[in-house]
Length: 299
Ligand SMILES: Nc1ncnc2c1ncn2[C@@H]1O[C@H](COP(=O)(O)OP(=O)(O)O)[C@@H](O)[C@H]1O
Ligand SMILES: [Mg+2]
Image (tube, rainbow, N blue to C red; front, side, top):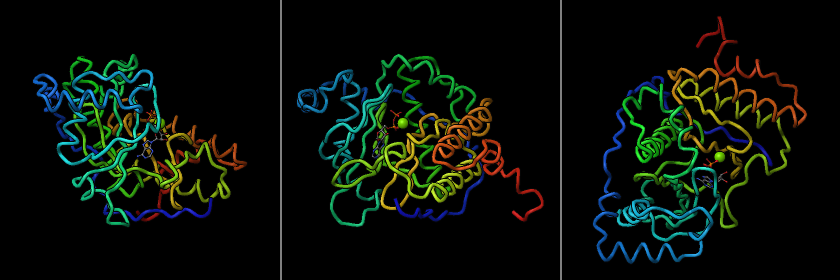
C-alpha cells in the first residue's frame, strides 16, 4: 500500500440533526410482490434460479424480489453478478448498474458503472439488535416493532448515513438508491474484484493510514455521526484511498449511546494500529476525534 489521499471536503453542514422523517410505509416493492404480474413472476423465477442467489440463507421473500425488480425497472441495476459477502443480516452482491446509476456514480469511464447491492434479510434473527440503534435516533422516532418496518428504517438510515458522511468529506461508497430492504451503492473495487479490507492487506505505512482514519472519524463526528462499527473490517483500500463502509448502524451524536459507541470505535481502531506497531492510546484518538485537544486553537 502506498500513500493515502484524503478526499476533499464539501462545506461541512451542521451536525446530523436534520430530524428527517423516514417513511417506512408500504413500498412499491410490497405492491409488486402482492400483485405478482407475469413479468415480475418471470423475473423472480429467473433470479431464484441464478447461481449467485442460491447461497445458503438467502431465500428472499417475495417483497425482496419485488424490490430487486423495482430497482431494475428504475434503471439502477442491469444485471446481477456474484455475491461479495454473506453476513449476519445482509448479503452484498456485485451488479452492473443501469443508466440511472450512471448519473450518480462518477466513474472515470463512460461505461456502465459496477454497483454493490446490499440486501437485508427481513428474517435475520439479529433484527432485534437493530432496534437498539434506531431507538434514540431522532430521525427514527415512531418506528414500530414490525420486523419489516425496522429493516426498512435501517436501510434508509444506512443510505442517509452514507450521504451525510460523503458530504462531510469522508470517502464512502456513493449511495445510489434504496428500495425497501435493498440498497444500491457504488462498487468499490476493480475488474479483479472487491477492494480488500484493511484486515486483509499488509499496511506499509500505518502512520499515514492512521492519520487518514482518525481524520475521517473526526469528520464524521463533526457531521454529527458515530460509525458504531469502525474497525479494520469496515475500511477498504482502493486506488490509494481508504474507503469507510458499513454505516448501517451509525447513529447521530444525539443517540443516548453515541458516546459509548464512539469510545468503542476508538478502542477498535487504536488497537488495530497498536497491532501494526504504533503507539496510539484509545484516549488520544478519542480526544482527537472529539476535538477535546483543540482548546484554545482557532476552529
Ligand atoms: N460498496 C461496496 N463495494 C465493494 N464491496 C463491498 C461494498 N459494500 C460492502 N462490500 C463488501 O461486502 C462486505 C460486507 O459489507 P458490509 O457493508 O460491511 O456488511 P456487513 O454488515 O455484513 O458487515 C464488506 O466487508 C466488503 O467486502
Ligand atoms: Mg461490515
